[in-house]
Amino acid sequence: MATVALSSIAKSFGSTRVLGGVDLDIADGEFLTLVGPSGCGKSTLIRIIAGLEHQDAGGVAIGGAPVDHLRPHERRVAMVFQSYALYPHMTVRANIGLPLTMSRLRLWQRLPLLRLLSAQRRRVMRYIDADVAAVAGQLQLDHLLDRKPAQLSGGQRQRVALGRAMVRSPEVFLMDEPLSNLDAKLRVHMRTELAELHKRLGATFIYVTHDQVEAMTMSDRVAMMDAGSILQLGAPSELYERPASLKVAQFIGSPA
Ligand code: ADP
Ligand code: MG
Image 1 (cartoon, rainbow, N blue to C red):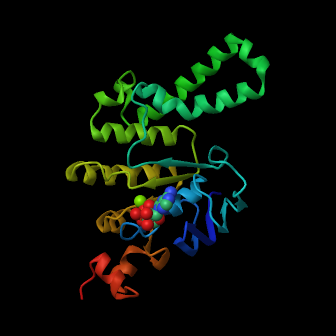
Image 2 (tube, protein in one colour; image 1 turned 45 degrees about the horizontal axis):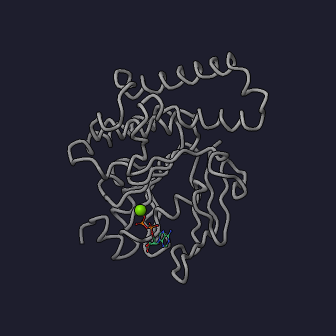
């Protein structure tokens, strides 16, 4: 069960209050989108869920268990960034497999003996390659595994970033404006792909965008944020038909 529960999450940077006590319960397998104007705290909130940032107050629980003491790789989440965050000197294969390689390295550091067992190491590398191949197949990247990011199109790079998130089979995907670097046509195409991926994986998706069309077409529910708090939370049709305030109506584009 990968529910995500946020209770009274507050965060300031210096004297600037960025999140003012956010409560949000996300269901297992839900596609929840955070929307809102630039600077309203969307990235900060999702980074707190990922463990990349720590809240000043409040708590995060994943699958019913508090995760505030867990480091990012210990949480059952994977994050996809707008900038792709791929390593330019590494192949697609190595980029996708990186989380697995990293967790192996951590194991090797804990168990120095294992470092000596190169046969063992080769076998683990083969497992990793098999996992990477499986993910690459799902994302139609099979034929690109030996390329470097510079040799890929924007859409392919975004798929590699998705692959890197998928390879650990996380229960929660956190996506921070993953499509915003793509051109309009590709963005529309990737919208459909993401929605299909969500259905196929059955994982919980928390998706950040400032694009209301993305929010309205892909999500089970939308949380509209402004200035560090949630103005309205509901199904896309609810926000559209019954906006709780003028701000929501304007952002969503409801008829006046
Ligand atoms: P959004 O993703 O909705 O555009 P962010 O969460 O990135 O908003 O940022 C919210 C506010 O917090 C902004 O005013 C931003 O400048 C500020 N902020 C974000 N990260 C930091 C940081 N590491 N240090 C200082 N201020 C930050
Ligand atoms: Mg942001």
